[in-house]
Image 1 (cartoon, rainbow, N blue to C red):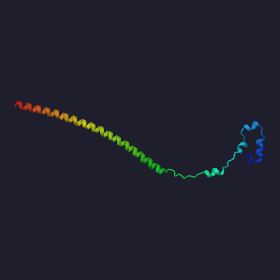
Image 2: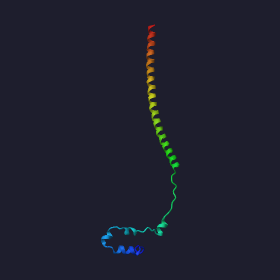
Image 3: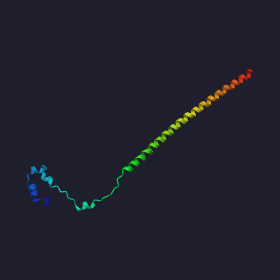
Image 4: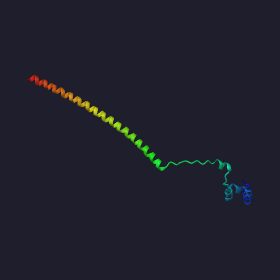
Length: 117
């Protein structure tokens, strides 16, 4: 790398005292080389990736959100249906018990009326 530097920079960096070498200076920063080798250029592989378009991303997000919301709603409705079905069944059994009690009272009243006649 020293062979690539101009002679003025080579002599400045070599003839400096040790105290100045430890401190970075403009001439040392200017020595940096921004070259690449053939091997680095040959290894560079260009891959073309199709970016996810905004339309496809939006459509996919909308469909995913709709499916998740629909699934949550389905389980909520099924749970509410089960609860209401259980309440209706309990009410039917309570009504059936009340009808049987009334039927028993009516039978006892009919027997009392027949015995009194």
